Image 1 (cartoon, one colour):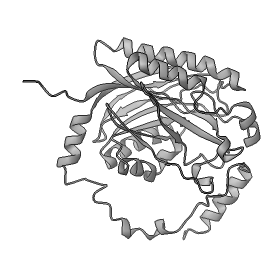
Image 2: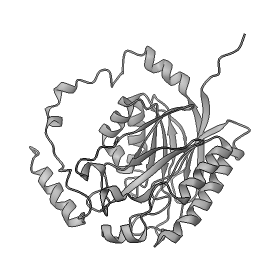
Image 3: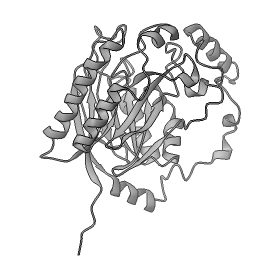
Image 4: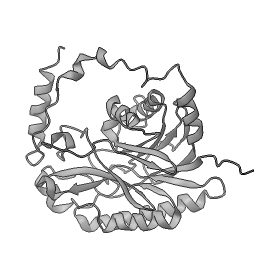
Length: 334
């Protein structure tokens, strides 16, 4: 009698400490190093668990260091797919792994001179999903949210159904809002991936430690695993901020399975993902079943728009973001 295969594997959250490139030529050395780290994770931990998922942080390739969309578009933005994503596909096929890339600054001619903050889930069969950050870190980030694009008709919260489970990703500030992760879960996600560049004092350090607080909460409220990679660049690489790392893996009860010690520098942290256990829990649980218990009609605030979208991303600026924030605040009764 054949024994059923148990869907259980290792995931690796990798954090990096790169200087930010001033132009596209600086992206390749970062990709070189991240490909080496994939080899390290898969081969180094092979005696303990098969590593099937490897995750890198936001700004792994480039950060939006310029203050205008025009500069980002001209100097750092790339189309997807590109030479770098092809290298990740080759590595995924070689090692039979799934790679959540660090974010690219993406240009897409269908939307004019707009820049997105984009991460790709890449497997042995190629690019599976492309996620564009929905909640940009306003007012400072001037790349566009898909929410800013009139008649944007692509899935904002894609989920990939893979042999290692259903994988969904959201980026950094997205996680401060419960809604993106709730939507990914409603779309079928079982593993919620966070690529992030959350800085001090809100990152992985006391007394605030939003990083750990939010990751555990999103895991618990969605009955989902969380694999979270945080930027770990030193102040000299990404001024004016320093980045505490603290990359971590959390189970569907909100328990921390593994976490890198906070502080800058390259690190790899691994833990086991047990998809069969998660599916059993979701199927049998009746209490603390937050999505099934959600009383959607009870929240009229969701029936009116707050932060204005659909106005395009080409003219974004810090000043325009501030104007839109004020417009949204004026609609709130506080």
